[in-house]
Amino acid sequence: MLLGHTKDSRWPAPEEAIEDARRFLREQQGRRVLVAPHTDVDGLTSGVLMLRALEAVGAHPLARVPGKGEHAHSPAFQQRLRAGSHDALVVLDMGSRGAPIVPGLPTLVVDHHASDEFPPGAHVLSAHGHEPVANSSLLTYVLVSPLVVPGPQEWLAVMGTVADLGATAPMPFLKDALKRAGRKAVTESVALLNAARRSSRFAAPLALEVLLRAGRAADIAEGRVPGVDVLHDCRLEVQHEVARCAKTPPRFASNVALLLFSSEAQVHPLVAVRWAQRLPGHIVIAANAGYLPGRVNFALRSRAPVDLIAFLKGLDLPPMGGEFAHGHSRATGGSLSQEDFIRFADAAGFRGLRTFDVERRGAFPG
Image (tube, rainbow, N blue to C red; front, top):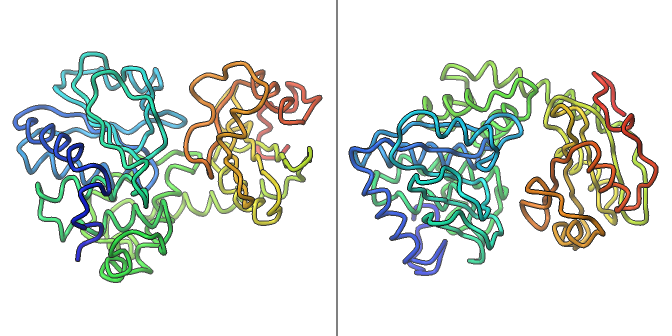
């Protein structure tokens, strides 16, 4: 059986929601459709699946990838989405919020993150709440399978699933699908593609091009398509930055550990994972003052059985805006101004931080 193809009418999402999303896609014949995927491997593979499905129904799709630190509700990205004349928008793997993305543009949101808010009037296909919760590329694969020949596209859903949930995720028929795709090729390709968005050069658009050129995971892992050499450079940079920033000594407040460093690469989630393994009883906050100018981007991870989103929302803080406490209960974080991050750190028990402590510091950890 192909990955995720069960006869369960409530999985990976309710059958009526899947059918509504399919109708939306079929209605795009002859229309110009923007496809906006998240820049991680799950998002990019969702994007490739959606582009191919729209082409199959006779639409004219165009991919738009968010920039460094952006998402579907970032004003700068929304401005780029509004540029030009388009008939519809498909947003993949970027969470959901209760505000319009492009007002007046028919929109389909495909996602798996926890949310009870959605853009007004949007068609929504969400896997959240339907156990085991499917990642976005697997959800997209099931959605578009009647519109394309599904077998040759399975490797894309396999890569997105492994990238988001791991090779042992409890997804139907994953073991056999991973064997067909080639486990070694999948894991190598995932590492290369994820490095593209984590690198300071932010090569996510190139990663999407590599996926579109490839016919299987081995094409990427073995460098058979143009662009893979750049992905190797990105991975070397990210590895160096993780090793450097992970040397930062943590500060402690009760069962919370804070690591504060500066890197133009998106290494804070990886540093948080590394330190969560070293401090299994702690909530680890890896905070990066160098990723975006004037902001502190941070990731929370813990091996303890704690809801990290609930932890953040339980702090004595004023509203922190849309860049705080999204994602998953086991993997969350945010992006705050320097002033707001100091307030957040204070509420988490790290009192006395100054603006100097959260400024960019070039090549050296804080």
